[in-house]
Amino acid sequence: MNLKRIFGTLLTILGIIGLIYSAIEFVNGSEFSRSMIVYLILGIVFFFTGIGLIRGTSDSAKM
Image (cartoon, rainbow, N blue to C red):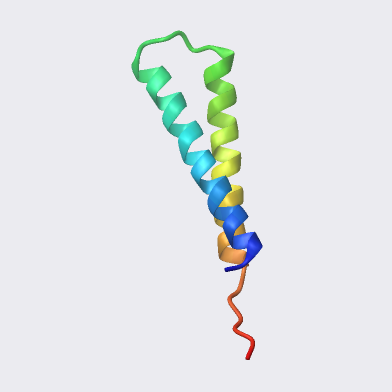
């Protein structure tokens, strides 16, 4: 497995965790605070960066 693909998967998982955490804060009725905005923005950035790394990495088998 390629290192870029592993790093992309890790970033995607971190992005999903950030998005879920900000959604939980929103549903629990906490005020729209800076922390929720930070988690949301970081989640979006990590998620789309990870997806971009996974898509952009080509698999090439060398024999």
